[in-house]
Amino acid sequence: MSISFDELNNIQMDVLREIGNIGAGNAVTSLAKMIDKKVDMAVPEVKIMGFDKVSQILGGEEILVVGILLNVTGDLTGNMMFILDINAARKLVNILLGSNDETNLDFNELELSALKEIGNILTASYLSALAGLTNLKILPSVPELAIDMAGAILSVPAIEFGKVGDSVLYIETEFSEGITKVFGDFLLIPDVESYEVLLRALGVIE
Image (cartoon, rainbow, N blue to C red; front, side):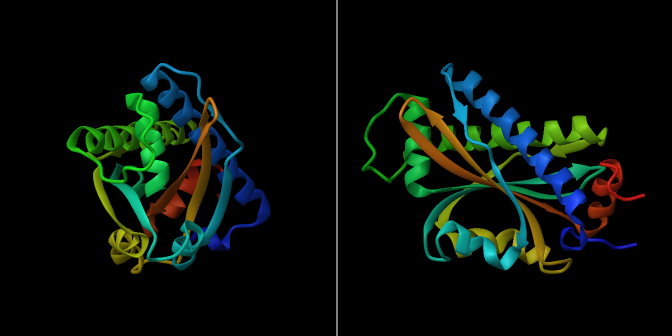
């Protein structure tokens, strides 16, 4: 049997949305521990959407973004991506490193390393929550970071994803530390064989 996200009914969608909520909550907790500050999170917006719609949500294919991509292996295989627009990335780095220069959109080596580590911790927290809920073995790879236009960043998983389907689990998360708010987007892109594995483990299909 082959199944994709866009074949799910409302109840099954609700289960995946709840996974998104829990995973994003874990990610925020990890971020708070990392920066040793209180971090709040708005209720994440979780959607199943066509992969070709993602760049529109981000603001268009030509908007400059930071993408942190890792491969997922184990019982579940595919890709996980965390995307920030360039201004949000600067805010997040400033929170982490205690800087307040929001005009400098060029990142030095230390700041790039910090961004990569943030992406690593956030995505790993999400995948850990998913593994805990499903009892699946889910292993993230070392993340790769790139700064480029959204269309170019999304082309990396699209090369693989285009072979298997057209929908992804999209989670928009709003972090806030003090008066600073940062929006970040998670994309979970399972391989075609993993849709069934994931949904069966979640109990949404028999």
